[in-house]
Length: 524
Ligand code: CA
Image (cartoon, rainbow, N blue to C red; front, side, top):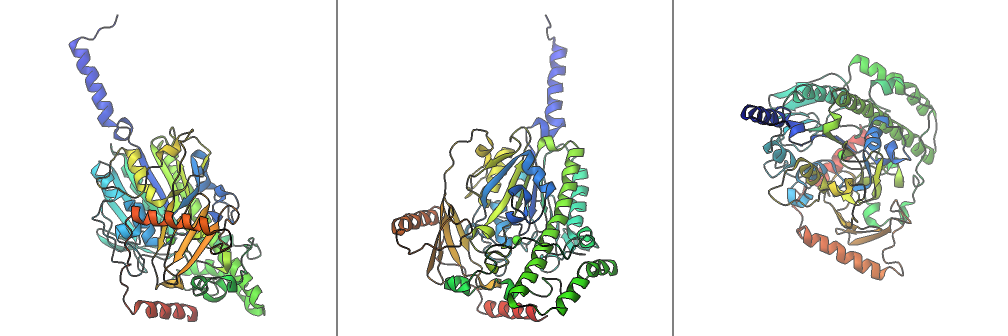
């Protein structure tokens, strides 16, 4: 029989210690985390979700290799606030970032996902869109889009890091990916796991595709129109009527590529013209009816949105290929999501902000080999407050202060236990671009109740029979008991999350200023 002598035991212990400490990520059982986060990407433009206006073969790889959440939502469908929630696991009122337009810069000193992971020994990085106005905290490495108030431009954006601002030449999705792969190249050599936020600007307004999509632009191709493209606005309540969302009225020449509006190099400009100039000439020669003009603008809008998704999807493929080629996929959780959805012509609208399904629902795809069965789908109601708790649980890190969200790890099990919860939503950015009224609401398994408190108007939707919030049942006969129940559930959430009764003060000049900018944009 084999027996240990003193020397052998010493060697064995040394070997075990070296296994534990030499290959940090594997031996400590802590996965790497790659969060692929895009901007304004509705599930109607993700082919893993079925009926999509564009094929996204690379994003779909994550769904095929893991789990697709069919009912994932954000709690405030606007860029910065959604990002603040991702970092804190808290709704807007608790993390202090209510609005892109009038909130103070994000307070990165509060408890965040990045700081907790960093303290737990993770290498942490954020590269790409940030849009929280303060410098990132809790990241060993950061390089964020800087120009146009951190909104960035599709071509030749500038990036800001600890050492200042750097100008670039090229397409934003390609640049973000170049920088990300460069960071991974050194991060993978370290004996510690990494947490990477890989943040795309794409497909945010003004939907400018990358070079290959400009080269392959097909003016004659037609995208399917949404059924509600010509929705009768007279049926809307006051909150909806007073918003400024319509393609017919608020889409600029730059949005639909009748003007260039971007600072491009001569080569980029030539490519832009090769895609759009002839179509523009033909459009100007036409004398379209009001309806046909909306149809034309919708096509330009939806097709450029789809093409910029395509440009991003190819870059996501580059990242996934890199992870595969470097044998990192086995120890890495890869997530894909977006800061909110988007109206792709539904109601005749573009933009986001509303609690409506198309704007508050987001894609959520997670691949984690050995932990999630490939090709799984879940219809559990989940929200962006859950992102941080989930990743912390996967990393074995306990938050010091409670978060609003819960870990989704139990949903990764093949036989997941029953999941039951209501989701809270609250939009504050009024006055603001597009004039969407402040509202809060509850989303349950089947119903949604929304309160527009500046207008004192309510909406009730049955999402089983009406999956796109088209028929307001509030006040209709037979719904009184249901409405009472939903009202109580909404109030229970407001108590649970300690939502203040009053909103932050907004400077008096903010509304007129925004209206002025909107008018200027239409005029330019
Ligand atoms: Ca956004």
